[in-house]
Image 1 (cartoon, rainbow, N blue to C red):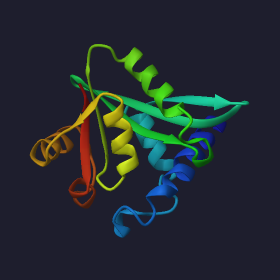
Image 2: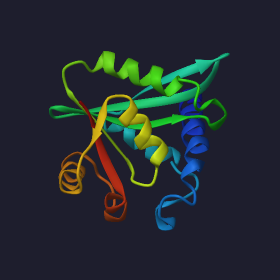
Image 3: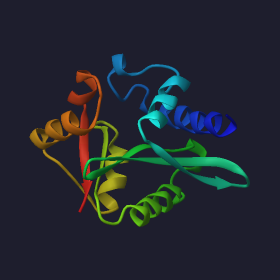
Image 4: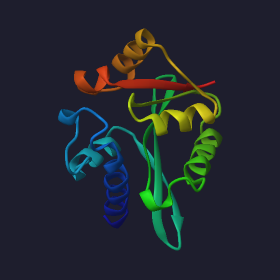
Length: 154
């Protein structure tokens, strides 16, 4: 329960960066309610965390589906961003996911997230391939699909 609360805190605090950036009707508070996190766990999402001074400051999850692994819910508390924590979590995911295609979906206007993945060896799929991949591997509302991109590790 405490881990769940800490994970939710990281997600909901870090996702405040999306407010005013993503389509207004896609934003809600909290960004991720507890039941949604429980549903993610039930659907096989595994979370990995990074702690500093016994405080969870970053999380990154993965979900293995068919022949691919999806990065799900990558968030770093705002006060701890730009310190290499996301890089360390991503390197760990590379280590645990050596032989499968690795993809991540994010908001097309989350330029900081896209830049992070591009800098770390991902490429961005074109619109047609993005739509195909989102339909195949993700369950997101149409409005979110229209405003999302998919990146894949090269």
